[in-house]
Image 1 (cartoon, rainbow, N blue to C red):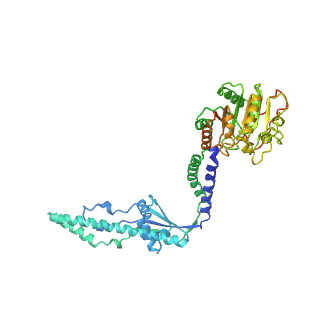
Image 2: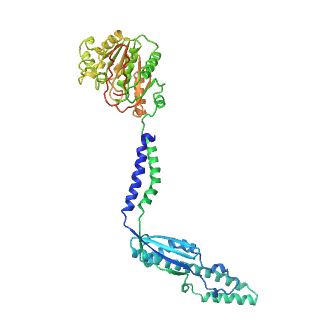
Length: 469
């Protein structure tokens, strides 16, 4: 899958981080200002008169709590109001704490230096106001508790202590008590980098995840056959042979195909084999040529017929003249005059090329003349191999099926779709053809180019080419 779709993953891994880098790099430089504050006790010790008051409530807040509070929405909203901005336009607020010094550092990053300084000081003010509000609420809660206890207390000494504490609470004004001390206000801002490198690195992980998802999506959307096992499953029959691609192919795959056809066709003395494919470019001509050569190598007399009168390939594939052939025979020429023997006499292979078909030539495949030609060929040769037109491109191959003792249907790995192969097999079965089984072919870098194979001497094994045509 990665060999087929790896470019998608690579594109995502390169383009998305690059886009993130450019987007961040092209943004205006940001400015950052900081203010250092130290929390103060929320309530002076003089206000605590009764021993019943939880002393922990009135200690100084920790710097970590102040840093956390500075980033909360209530504080940032209040700070935005102080500088007459919307919360979104306030800037990015961050804060840190130092437990050794007890200080908290509040930083604001904004588009301009002045905006960053004003926002940082406003956040510090808003933190103090928020702490004062929390103190007021705590004092109110304590007052309510003390009043309830005073109404229930019978001991005179205890009542005096509670009353004194309530009086101290009533005199205390939280809004007049500073809750934080500004150690260093924001008086200057520094320019900070947009960190496009960091943006690119952070974008790499989602880019890889997106690329993997797109690879899976593309693989599911692609219905092309990926292996011989899938060819068998779609065709509903055992694989007869697998023909590898990539340059010249050894004879062994075609010898195995020949033996399988002989076995499945019942060891007939004479037979006609139709080589069919769903569409063009799936190796039909190469397989037909290789199969004919394999039959000829066993000592049989073989004729290879190019019955694809719309796009003939056999003659050019074998390096033979294309002047006269089946089209001329169907128009009335003598059959014997157009038969060709590649490589000279004694090879056992004869070729009936397509010739020079005209617009009406494909219609002649269903004529009585074609039936007569097939009878002559069957009587003259032991094996007739028909290279037929693609099944899904036209119906030209259907009139040839009744002459066949068996049909092999091709599927090219990584090219033929499962739907096309299934449809082609169904067409053959509906036409009553004896489908012997499928043949898997593989594409090669030159599978679209016309190649020739010309046996040069009797007894020499012919060179068989990778699928093409």
